[in-house]
Length: 438
Image (cartoon, helix red, strand yellow):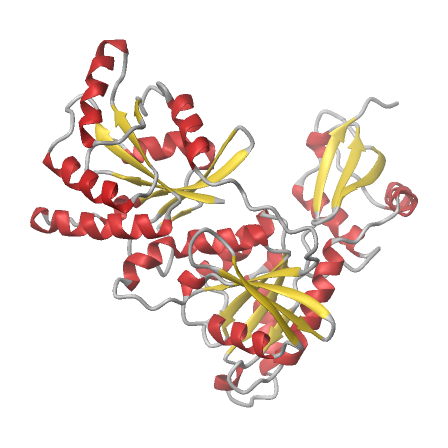
C-alpha cells in the first residue's frame, strides 16, 4: 500500500486530520515498545483503495530554536519514504514564514503534494483558502478535520495522486516471503543465507516505488520471492528518524507476502514488539514461521529446547499453531530446514476441506459436545458449515443465534477444524451467520 505522510508546523491540526482519515482504524501502533518517540501509524480506505497514513508530528523538536532544523529532517525523510505528502496549514491564519520555508523544500523535491488548509469550519471562511495558493502548489483543499468538512474531497484527491497498486505478474508463481522482526535480530543474515542457497538466481526487481527489492531464488526446485524490507536494515546518518517508517515498511512487506518469517532474538524472545508484529501478521491472514535466531549464544544446556518451547506456549498463546525453529544464521544451525517449512506453510494456507467432511464434524459436535446457551433459555444450534475461502482458510457456520458463539467455543471449533487437516502455520478464520431454522 502507498504511504501518505502528514507534514506541518505545530497547532495546525495534523493529529486531528490523521484521526479523521484513519477513522476507527486509528493507531496501528502507538508508543510501540522499543521505539524512542511516539509513533502514529494508521490504515485508511476510500473507494476500495487502502493506504497508510503517517503522522510525522513525533519528529518535531521541542526546543523552538531547533524547530526548523527538526522540520527539515522530517521533510527529508517524508520525501524519501512517502508516495504523497499532505501539507497541513492553518487555513484561517494563512501561510506564515515557516509554511513558506517548508513549501520551498517540497517544491524542489518534485514529490506529489496536497495542501490541506485546515480549520475552514464553515462557508464563511472559504475565501481564506485562496491564501494557500501562494505556497505554489496546484492542489489546495480547504478542510475542517474537527467538523469533517470536505474530507471526502480530500480522500478523492489522495486516491488520484497515490500510485496504483502493483499487480502480480501472471507468469511468476512464487511463494512470497517477508522477513520481519525487531532491529538487530539477524534479519539480514537470514536473507543472505537464503539468497546463497539458491540453485539459480532469477532476478532482482523493484518491489515498490522506492528502495525495497524483491529477490527471486529457487531452492530445491521451489521458487521463492524474498521481500526485502530494506529500510529496516539500511544504515543512515539519521537512523533514529528513518526508524520512524520502519514499522510501516514491515506492514507493507507483510501485505505482499504469503508467509512471514518473524525473526526473534533467542536471548531476548517474545517481547511486546514481537507480539505486536505477530498480531499484525495474523490479522492480515498470512502464514507465519517463528525463527529464534542466535541460538548459538545460549550455551549447550540439554533442556534448552524444551524450556524455550514451554516459554513460547506461555508467552504467545495465540500462536499455538505456528511452528518455531531454533537457528543460528552465524553457524548455519537449523537454517537448512527453513525453505521446506515455508513451503509447507504456504501449502497449508491454501488447503481446503470438503463440505461433507466438515458437516460430519458438525454432526459429531452436536452429538457429543455441550453447546453454548444463555440465561434467556436460548440453545445454540449449528445447521451446517462450509469453507468459503483459502489463504487463509475461512469457514462459515450457519447457526440460529450467532451471538451465542463465545470466544471459547470458537477456539474449540478452530481446534476441531485443525484436527481434520494440517493447517500448521496458517491462521484460520471463522464466521457465524444467522439462518432461520427449526
